[in-house]
Length: 267
Image (tube, rainbow, N blue to C red):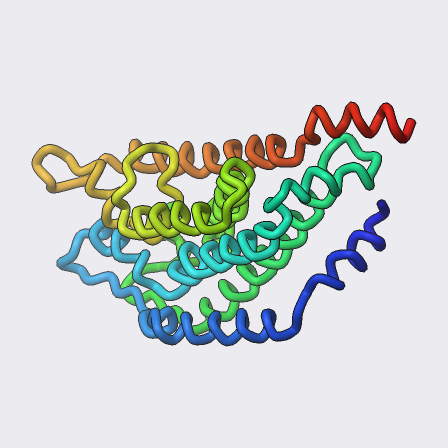
């Protein structure tokens, strides 16, 4: 099945009322969670720079990129894929393409990831125009805590990638939308409030700057082992990307039984 046929096939399944509900919920969530309320980061002379760094996660630009968009992408993943996993419809659909992978799943996942990646870029760019940093040169803020759009995108994209693959993996394993939703809610709350310390599965690491910084305080609490903190940050981001890619390969594989059946019947 070619890309054009896949697009036509998927568009037939989209209901306008669901799209409108999704947009309305998204707008309400933005106002209810106060994403746009906190948009100023102030560095004071009598406050250590690292202490100011640690509250950068309160900024709206971090909240919308590290929490709101990833969560909405996960909800979309569950909504789009849940019906296909009831009765193993997803595996049956693989009989209609000659690829060595599940073309339907890969296509849908890529489209959802692409949509939210664009949304992430647009949101960061817009919210950044309302964000101000006072008392410090924004260009001198370390990448780990930077609030410049391109830096924020690079830091938060692994979270988006993880939230589009993690629920899909659970859905693949359980074949049950309610179990997937329950696990996702539990994980998300633990992630938001940094309850999880099972590295590398803490993904909302940007919004939790204060908590990760506490892990690297000096014994006298006067300073932070910043080099170790940066190493932890980069390893965490890289690990999430690698794990997400592995999950995609796992999910996109064809059922061995169905693949043999396809070879026998159609070739």
